[in-house]
Image (cartoon, rainbow, N blue to C red; front, top):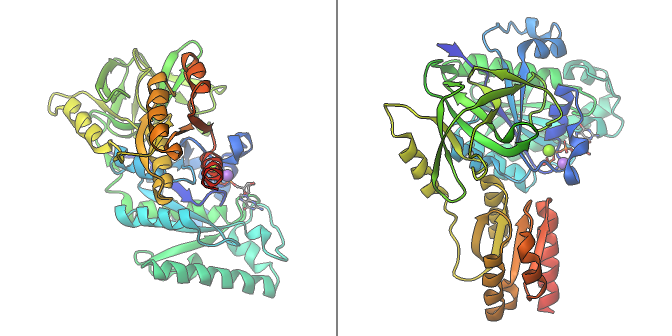
Length: 451
Ligand code: GTP
Ligand code: NA
Ligand code: MG
């Protein structure tokens, strides 16, 4: 038996600071490089315990945190709820969560949505009230603990922050949670801790890390025990072409062991199961962000959960992001299990409506969910580039109802052979890599059509 790092999902409304918080911890600047400043894919970052200890200094020893947990394994999620699909694919993927709020902005739609997901899966979480550096009159103390920086603020600033914290306490209460500022919590099992921080200046980050480690040790050690010899289970985050490696997949392994030459089963976009053999397992160096392909990987013969890894194997081209990854075993029918999961993800569609295309299961579900919330009817939702059949079907839909002649395409291209078809048709394409922008443009178009 081994204790693995807890998988910690960072959730919250768009722009409330999820990526910036992880950036601060990593000392990197991934947020600045993202298209539209929005996290479109799900990244994973392992933070080893000694890094946490470096950041926290003697704060950790004061908390009497033992050396049980090897570190924290963070998953950054887009503000738009692909977390739901990750949870469904990966089973109990997140062990802990950080719900992040902009303290000046308060609760927003995706905050409620994240909270509902946490409720549904009973995931233990802390609330982080971010951007305290933007409070009027706040005096920055770079990298300081919250306790220290707070005690050095003017009375009026302290009062202002406390008022904002009480608003959060009130909102959480309406949602059925008891909560308090973390240093006033008397019972960690029944009250949610709220930690005020600035992801930009690092104030309060010490307490976030210490609290997560503490909670994991106190409440999760049993759940984090894994059988190092069991066939691996994981979730595919992304399929990527890598120079010299061909098509690879990035995955999070949350249980068991994965070895070179293992046979693994995966889900294909054609809704079939692929069985393939692992050629190599590559792991980013600790603290490296695995989607940043310029960074170096280390080749491994095997990895034990929890691990974020890249896998090179034949025939990965049509594997779907979000697919389960399972090592074949003699005791269970792994292929059938994956087929059962495929049945669960078919997206319900209406007889009439628009067409949605996206690059991953997670992003497709996220786009569909957003459109549903806006009562936009969806005729079909598929993974992959826009092809000729899509355009023909959309033209037919257009003839019945002009508003249904639209294609929403997230993070996918129009197939080169189909561009002419598209130009010669009445079909209107809304494409890009920022979901909110695509939907805004679509709404604008609908408004014009209706006038
Ligand atoms: P999505 O991935 O798009 O959902 O957003 P996010 O939650 O990851 O937010 P992100 O980290 O991209 O931050 C959004 C903006 O807020 C960026 O311009 C950040 O620099 C800024 N920001 C984040 N945290 C802080 C903070 O503590 N203080 C200040 N002043 N700005 C912050
Ligand atoms: Na952002
Ligand atoms: Mg982000």
